[in-house]
Length: 296
Picture 1 (tube, rainbow, N blue to C red):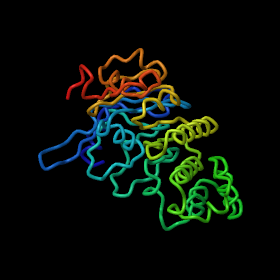
Picture 2: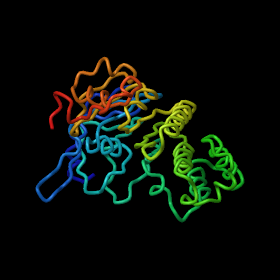
Picture 3: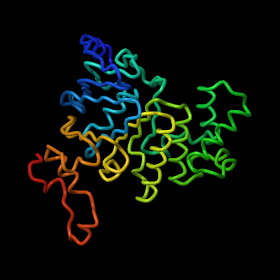
């Protein structure tokens, strides 16, 4: 976030939501390009309360990841960020400094899309997990190691000594994703942001890991903000779905009933594209290009 963007964004101070854990109002993100500024996110509002499970969905390029990573502080330094309000647990996130290396926001955990590139390939799993635990709790080395093993068991990795000694490339994709969930939740965040956490996994493992994340966040009393393009997973594991299209929020509502309450053609198109048993014998599934009312 640049100085000019910070100055602009701090001028307005809307009335805060008293019970909100995360409140974002009028979030806009632009990037410089050779042909002029490109707006990736345009005036997005988002409010989460403790315990909420919210999905942000849309096609690639819809702005969903940019919007959520702005909250976590993981945008590129050249991103121009402005907002009428962007607060987490009462702290104004607009006051963060613009740094090439992001500052950790206390109380926010992140599960990234690709565990292989997000985990350090040099450090062992034990070193990475213990570093997070040590940062958040004053424990002896033995206690930290025991706590790390406990977190691995909680995410379904029971061969703890082998996993702690392994480097990420020595584990399968599903195991790496579980390690990343353990690392994110071991800091006991109040908000967990999961960016396409199951995109590289098969359908059965995706549902298993989503169930695990939901159960662990509920155990911690944390809110869950999930970025996804999988409408079926969102309907099954979140309470509310926010639909983004071309940088804007075009629809939102309860996840399980969104198919009945959708007001925008784009939302209806996303739902129509989900494979179901009733359309298993179709020769061709609907695509967004064939949905009436959605601009090309």
